[in-house]
Length: 264
Image 1 (cartoon, rainbow, N blue to C red):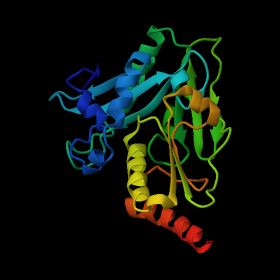
Image 2: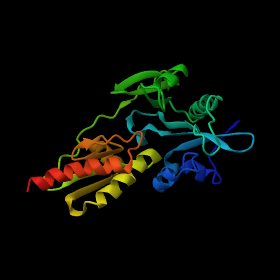
Image 3: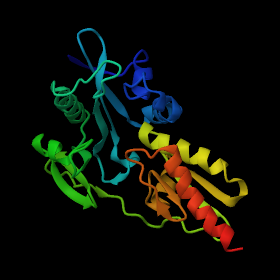
Image 4: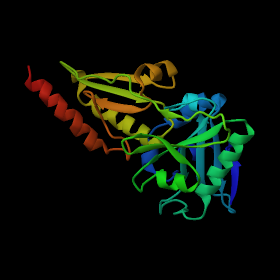
């Protein structure tokens, strides 16, 4: 196994998070590719774990905290570490040390460019991006939000701890229409999948929907709302991890649309 930088030849496998076999990834659209094109000159960095047979089996993506969903200064943030864990495609590649190797490579890279520390997020449950795993790699929790944990490893004594971005406002409930508000950066195919399914479902209800979309690569919008990615249906946030199925999204919108209809 070798850890290598992303290249033009490996970009396509990165855009689909190593799941080129997945129809769901096709459904998620090209938002991640668009995100990468817009962000690669703003400091986003990607490393890949390549096996001896040249198969790409793992990835890590990280960027300056100023372009992330967190607050801090002179820090980099790990958006995600992913080692292919499905039976399809190249098969389950976990438990071979790829995650540790990818994280170590990112740490070394960030030290070389003079970053004060590396930040990551984790969840308290034993699922994807486990906070407990990062703790074993020397990261410590500096902020909490529900089941989410913000962790970091400072490289310099003067480093300032990061924090979760606080919501400053949120979308409201529609009066004569169902208010659907979408916030999207595009970096995560899972969130992009939820976004695309919401758009498809909303189209079925025509003028009963008041649809608003925010491109949150615009930092002014992020600072205004305190939201980086999210889907809100009449003010209630839709859980996007794991991404909800189309029928579930449709039913949630339909439920709100019925209430509006009955109020006429």
